[in-house]
Length: 305
Image (cartoon, rainbow, N blue to C red):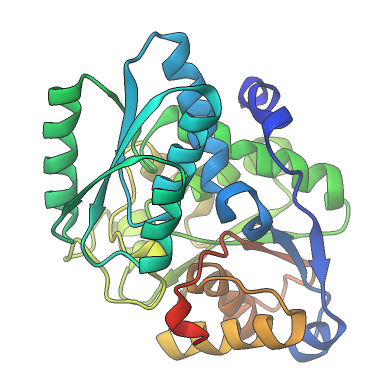
C-alpha cells in the first residue's frame, strides 16, 4: 500500500477536507468530508486504476481492459492514456450517459453489454482473451485495493487526530476493504463504517455468510449497484467491519445528496451521498467525529437540466 501511494502520488490530487457549519448543526456533531469527487476523473477509482495500469505496463501488457458502469472505466481510461497504454472498457447499456461521455473523452474503446454482472464479466473475459489485454477488476483486485489506500494515508495525514470514524459507501468493496485494512492496522481506534443501500444486506454475508440473493441492486446510487463484494474484499470486511454496516433507504440517499448540493455547493453523485446518508440518518451515538468519503462526482445531467 505504501509502495502504491509512492508510485501514483505525483499524478494525483491530494484532495481537500471540507466541512459545513449548517450540516454540523443538522447532524449535531462536527462532520468532515474527504472530497474525492474532486479527484482526477471525478472519483477515487483513479487511484487504484493508475496503480494497476502502471504495474501492467511494467509487465509489458499490450493494454488494459475492464467492465464498468462509469467511474472505474473513466479512471482506467485516463490512467492508460496518461502512461501510454491501450484500453478497452465493457460498459452495461444502463450506464449513465455522463459517465459514458467521460470514458469517450479519454479515447478508450467502448464495448456495450447487458446490465447484469454475469454478462459484464462474460463479455470482458471474451474481449480480454481476444485482445490479449490485462484485466483490471473494478474492486476484486490487489492492485486496485492497494492503490486506493493512498486515500487512507491522506486522511490520517490531514485529519487523523480529528476523527473517530470513516463512513464509506460499499459496492464491490475495493475502497471499503482498502480503508478497513489500512485504518484497522494503523489506527484501530478509528471505526470504518460501511454504508449500503438497504437491499444489499451485507451484514447477513459478513455475520452469517449468507450472500445477497440478487446480482444487481435497484438503487439511485449507480456506482454501488453490484450486490456482491469481491472474494478478496469479503474476508477483510468480515475481519474489520462486522457489526459496522449501516443500511440506507433510497429517499435518505436523495435527501443527503440535496443537502450536500445546497449547503456545501458540491455536485456529488448519489453513491457519494449514500455515505453521508449513513451519518445523517443512522450515525451510532457513540461516534462524535465522523468523516464522510465523498467518493465521486460524476452526475448524470438528468439531475440538473
